[in-house]
Image (cartoon, rainbow, N blue to C red):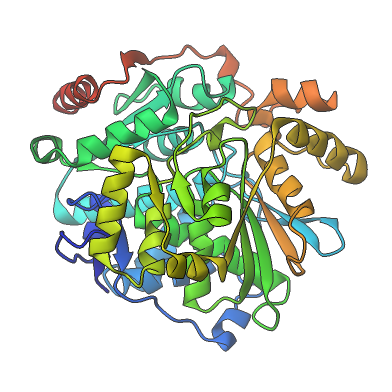
Length: 463
């Protein structure tokens, strides 16, 4: 299978190069030339199978023979063996027809672990095979950085630099990154927003001198392997609820849109999904885009669901590319305009294509708090603010169709102060995080300046 750029000015590459490259050289995002197809009988057969087996099949459909099946199965078994729950992503019923998919049983207590743990093993395998080492630069709104540090710390062929917006993530999220003692990890508090961090990463990837000097790669959800790995839990959750013999709806707390786009990927592969609701907090660029047909950046607002405090959702470019019938010229023109003007109008035909599967719901801070408390009182489930955005969106989604699954993206213990303030219950620290408070932190502070951060990355990579 070959992977092409959404902007059409980069050569098609294989799975290995798409994974190790992250972002395409022309600034676009890699997409498969064609979506692999799974039949109903095979999907039905996922019922009761170990999560790692399903992951190996789904990811293998994109790897398309570049990685031996037995090797990929071994990597998946090792990756998902790091999770605390035997089901990896268990379902919890909230109400008749309504479920939570708990994505937070991995090493950093967030859904990013589901993709990051297998991604680190893919990197190891591919880099050893190519006798190569590289530098990963990632931006995080809270959870990607911790998951990346947990997955890549101590690995000999990778150096990782994680950028996070100073003062805009929780203490627990920060400590999952900054307490790592591994010498191949560097963390940087950027004086700005996540959108600033993300823009700096994109600038770095489009700097050919830097890319060549440090062999730059990325593990944000711009990396298609993340999308492939996240599509897996759409399959396992839907099959547990009756797919492919009935369609299932999903509500996805959305910031960078990668998790929601993974559902689109699952749909294109043959999984019957009736609806995907992109649930946003007050940073509602996606909700406005689906409702109004205008994708327009606004000022980032700080909320109690900080991993979603984003006003430029990178993976929306992938959906736009699909919706304009894979026209790379139109996609490049649109997102170059968005980068300069901060807004684009979605063509009506493309918006109609998006509406076939997607809807958007924006949830305000008061509603998030009410939902956290109401969910605890009605079900006994303590949920974090990001999951609460999804649960609130489910309640407001109208004719969504049943069953419906809310993706629960983080453990409440990652936001103990906010959860306690709202519910009166302080989540106890899981085993994985109970010793974070006693560890010294190690990170640097830099301005939101691309040249300063690129110089920092090069110095760290060459040290």
